[in-house]
Image 1 (tube, helix red, strand yellow):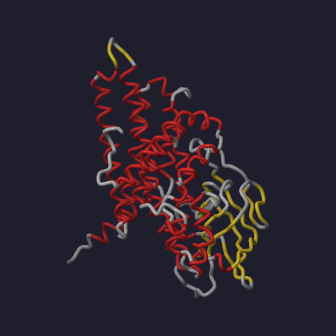
Image 2: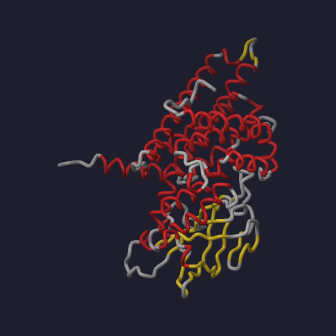
Length: 401
């Protein structure tokens, strides 16, 4: 274990899980990640290995066949996996968010039907809020769910669906107006639907099309897609929690833990960038000595290490707050904002330390340099995080006068 990013107060079980995951990352992910990433190839063998480790059921309760672990354990595992290859952590993240939403908000029947198969990785989850025209403005969702007898017909277009092709269960946020009088606040007329589908691309069930992978700068290997709903019929018992109008709150609860996940990814990528930078600085010689002995490089390494340590501490704090049952939107927003910004800066410094070689696809830092920007956008942009943080601070520190 490295000196940086240690987490104090872990149980023996947590330490054993983390040690197993780190070993898996070092042996099974890091050696193949760059090659798979350059080919934009789905990491099938890695995913099978994660299933065997039980990571798809890490936070699913033991009564449903999972490991029943905390958000902190999960976040620390994500940190390790992202250190190996960030895309792999994305494959688990959306699955985990859907499992979390089912655990927190699903009916007993929904939990019993989905969670045991999600714990083994047989059912793989994805979740869908975004649309082509709305970005962070979730209240402007236009995809509609209309009641037809004892079913709903879903129509609309969704965007940026992580695991859109490989998933078999998608939690989809739609607008449902029945039972909501004219003038109801937009976020109170939204519903989450549990949509089952076949993996793959094209028309994966009547009324549901996954057009194909979106080509991306980084974050390769994982499939990011659109989703087109054209009168897709969903039975009423597949409304998450059994009641319409609760979708916005359910999704925001999921996104809150998703933000801790993105913070953990930023921590993992930053750690790897620091490892690469500090290693290269001791091997590369200029002017008769390793560049690590030049003060300019030592300053960079000092700043990088401090950012790695600070981001990790904030991420751990946000996870522990949620685990304690408290509201953690402020801490999760801060952790996600800081970890993603620091990740970008640490990766860039490692890139600079590599000099011209950082621009070569032979060196791992080139891949990290293309991966880091996704964290500035995923689960809400830095600007959205600052809005959330600002509003919560004004609630906490309301002027009494």
